[in-house]
Length: 481
Image (cartoon, rainbow, N blue to C red; front, side, top):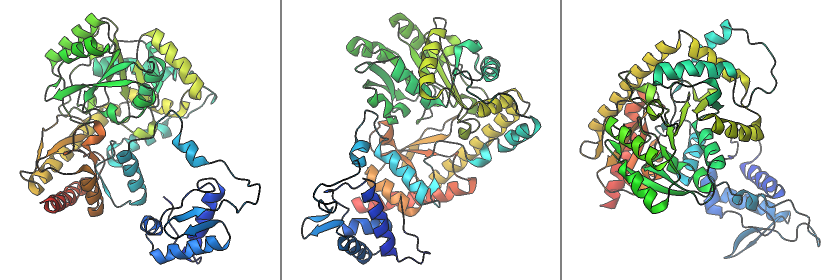
């Protein structure tokens, strides 16, 4: 969000006037559209209302805007002459199109983190800088001279990386596959996008967990899919619910994150995994298994994925480097039947001709290096340490006011608040206190749930951040009494 430069020699009201004039000329505010109310714009820009009054007066003097008592301020219709020339109404374009924007809470989180760097970030679902293998990757890049043709690579992905993933998947996840059955993507989200756009059609019914990370992805609604939920308890979903949804809605696909589920941290138990595979095989239903967190298992032992037990070839397995190494590498993968890989590769080629080969080379080197396993061990140890610090802080600051199950892996803690609160009010109050989190409603749950990410903030920020959240919660509860 644009802000006036208080160190500039140009008066603030002139900066605001020039900024608004630019937005008008670019079509952000087309002729006849309303400008923000003076008081509201003053709050957004952090200035006095009188400064906005001056800025609007400057624009009125040029004939660019009109103000009427009781009607507000609008862009002039006559400024451009009898036959007005005007830029496109970019605002209306931004509001149209079939691809929906992110949910409001996620847009607000992104905005606040960009303008308030001092916020303690419990919202971003990624590793902090000190948890990423920056030194290891830097050393690998220094030790290896990258050479070769830097043109378009195979849109299916850099072949040496796919070959390295064959070994990785068998060693760490018990999945036996070939490089021809692997598609490299920019992460789990791109894998999901390709699946929804290429393998499903508008009106198709799919099953997702409740709550679910998938619920926060507008791409499902943008694709015109009908979402039906599978309730998650402390043992994961109930596989019989899939049979029920199939009979009632003829669901065509099941999207699951069964290991250290986002956001609850639960693990689908072994008996239910076996039962689920039996039911989906009986119904001929494909499973999309999103498995970003399994290698964060704090004891180093994670349940085997569906894909390792699947003898019918009904599972599309999605993985990523984002939660175990570095989100900035933008490396993910999908293991699927060769027919599906070919279809999605073709679509991928239409989108971007494939990923940059350089991060793929780095990822391949890291997977095959002696540095990978020690990194995983340090990551698990540090994540458990951070989880314990957060739990200790919650028990200290909010005794009797919050409930949670202790996860054995992953980056998140899913909490139920005992007092009834309004998500919006708590969210805004926490930001004012200096901490930010993801409200549970983003994942489809009712009000009163929150997701804290303990992997993103610095270790010494976790306790103070929970203290700030506790103050925000108490403020909201006291206001509601």
